[in-house]
Image (cartoon, rainbow, N blue to C red; front, side):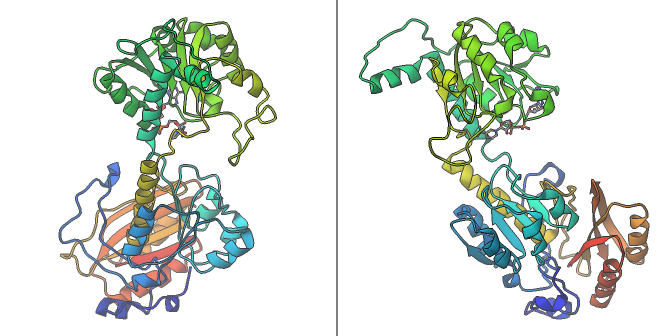
Amino acid sequence: MTSAQDIRPRKDELAAQAQYFSTSPNASFHSPSSHSSALTRTIPLPNAKHLKPFATEDIKVLLLENVNQTGRDILSQQGYQVEFLKSSLPEDQLIEKIRDVHVIGIRSKTKLSARVLKEAKNLIVIGCFCIGTNQVDLQYAADHGIAVFNSPFSNSRSVAELVIAEIIVLARQLGDRSNEMHAGTWNKVSNGCWEIRGKTLGIIGYGHIGAQLSVLAESMGLNVIFYDVVNLMALGSARQVNSMESFLAEADFVSCHVPELPETKGMIGAAQFDQMKKGSYLINASRGTVVDIPALIDAMRSGKIAGAALDVYPNEPAGNGDYFNSELNSWGADLRSLKNLILSPHIGGSTEEAQSAIGVEVAQALTRYVNEGTTLGAVNLPEVALRSLTMDEPNHARVIYIHQNIPGVLRKVNEIIGDHNVDKQMTDSRGDVAYLMADISNVNTTQIKDLYTSLESLPSRIQTRILY
Ligand SMILES: NC(=O)c1ccc[n+]([C@@H]2O[C@H](COP(=O)([O-])OP(=O)(O)OC[C@H]3O[C@@H](n4cnc5c(N)ncnc54)[C@H](O)[C@@H]3O)[C@@H](O)[C@H]2O)c1
């Protein structure tokens, strides 16, 4: 964390007072923007308090890998200093740049290893403007009080739309007809080609994507059944089926939308293909390990499965090029030789709309974290939020204390803040790291400075921030 003197105070009265104890961008408070998380689904208060103990332009943001314009705009509008680069950086250049910044935004190519993060002395938050967070050493970040956010659900609609397209393309063998025409062959057939109206779509995993797909499919005239480990409210006329065997026996199209978990690995294999209807179809746009591909190859060769669409694979190339070969996956050639099989390169969520939504979601999460300390949606810290302070609470401060999750810390923290009126407080832990947020009233700037110094001196301390 930077020292108090590193950040110029804001030019207003409060900031002038704050310069004595403010400690970096963390020493900021801003009224919450609206967001839809279940925990804080509150309408922003009209008289929400806008307090910042330092100048917003002192917050340095580095955005790499051509982060979407929507995200850049949101961060720039906050008044932060935003540096934008189209590409990722080699490690040595990244280390040079990251030393200075409070916020970094990346996509999948930038590796934020412990070695890089060790140099990031001012960094308080990382935004992954993508779905995955494997490129970040999440544990190192958590252990050093650096929050990490991503955007796991912004592309749900894009995936659902692709699956709808695939259902029709498979039912009409359109991929094969198109390939034949590209090769100069006219092959007008109706045998084995179907309308989808009145057929049954079986969705495995009725989460963000499965539920979107359910609504779209019904509007196309499909009947929808779903299988999920959780009992869920069905949308429209969809129906949950609790036995996988009955589910598979009923569906004309089976579409997988489960996460990658030990339980979902190979969940569609030889036994499941046996249970499926003869002439049915399989779609997998979830994770490559969910479907046993050699078993799919057998089921398609035998005619049990009339067609399939795969968007994901157990091993996927790291970049674009002619890498989808048998070296990558031993069954590659067998798979490619099958008829009525759509193969796509993990593009389910790859649309302009999804990129734009990711930009908004991640930039808003970063802004909320910097300005309010809210960790909702963080992938490596516990999720903590408090309702906003208002103009009717002029002498309040928000204490954020990120600490090691060891016995006795809360007693010590409460001894420090307990001399004041604690209006509200929330604390949660995740593994070895805990996050405490408390709004306290009737404090003056000298008392805030004392609070900060006392909390910083506790041995359990990872990071202290006081926003007011
Ligand atoms: N192809 C792409 O480009 C793309 C894009 C986005 C997401 N995805 C993948 O799609 C999948 C679904 O994403 P989502 O956002 O809908 O996830 P989600 O977490 O919203 O929903 C997953 C659902 O699966 C259910 N589930 C978990 N384990 C199960 C099991 N063993 N059996 C049955 N149901 C189970 C959960 O209860 C949940 O309802 C994920 O694997 C994700 O990685 C792929």
